[in-house]
Picture 1 (cartoon, one colour):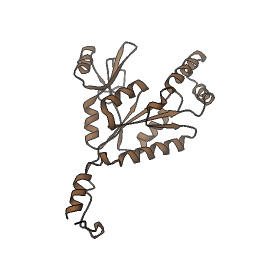
Picture 2: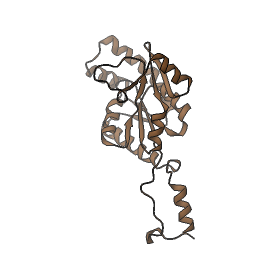
Picture 3: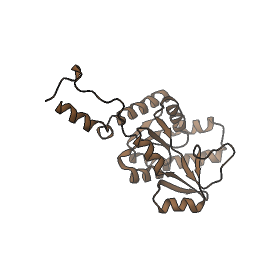
Picture 4: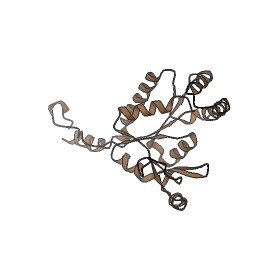
Length: 221
């Protein structure tokens, strides 16, 4: 018999853990992804940034397990062979990839993991992790605005900016592969949209691990 929860007969265990979410952000350089993800990490203590493994040497100030997991080339290739990586790529002679186990540990404990990767890495994650992945692509409001933002940073020469603009077109062509696509014409509004997406994804039925037990108790007490 279904009892009235208001009478206190059935209670939700507030300590029950949901399954975490893999939050994948992609965008062309200058679209505002870095600003959005940085603010998100500062505001939400349930989200942590994924730590990659790499074969490049550690730089001054970089700590093992905090900035990267530093591996030998042989060790990294063993990780590939043993399917210990969710995604990986070779960039300018060095290997980079996402170790599977730390991510799985975080998701199982109810924490979300944020990934700042390109569309190729996002595709690999979807193939390996399926429904755990929530992918968001951030678009600039226009090509002209994207170029203005790149120039306003004052970091690159004209030829580098033109290369970034050309690369942006190639990246944007993959927008339809993502679950959500946001136009960053207003940073605060875009960040609010991201927070709404995360809130809704956390409440999906399959991530509420306590629900089967709760409903069974609800129907039998």
